[in-house]
Image (tube, rainbow, N blue to C red; front, side, top):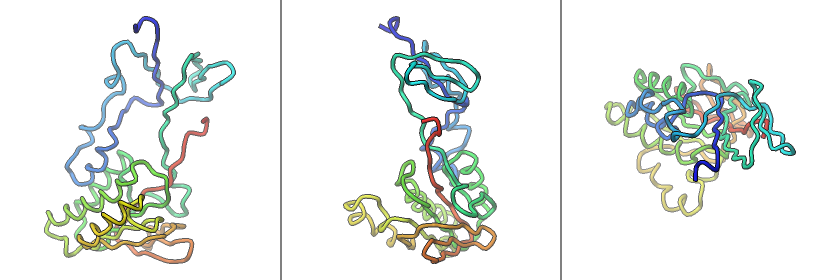
Length: 231
């Protein structure tokens, strides 16, 4: 009986982004306006929505304190704060004409513009470290990039490289052994056990802590992920 319970959803903004769609925005097969909706449209009638960042949670008093001064008491608290991108944790990592990400709406949109004007060179997809949201998405990006440059008729002018801190392309051993050849079949270079310590956007190179370097003309970087500080 819904009359016996109230549900309140709290979020810091009113922009719900369908995150699986971000993978397709750079290639023009999805568009920002198609994957963004007001959060209230995602909720059933009768569910309250409160827009504000969370300041802190008082576990002893069973109360959530919001940045706008409101205090929300609860009987049951569900924490689902997701992940925050932390590019500032990697030296030199700044979004620019040569360094992009598709893990945000703005980043995916800017990357679409960059790919449209890209005429050839080395495209490097780099996972800085694990864990990340959707670990297979960077690999999917490589496969879509292979398709995209074939469609544009310039695949032979593009060198695709996948750079990972893991010892294989896929995160699980069975998947790595069974599916690892998918990169080679498509002419995608694989660089493993690469722990990115610095991104030199101006110089076009990734530098690892063991002093290895991977050059690029266009870098697609998945930065470190972190949680909400109040948790």
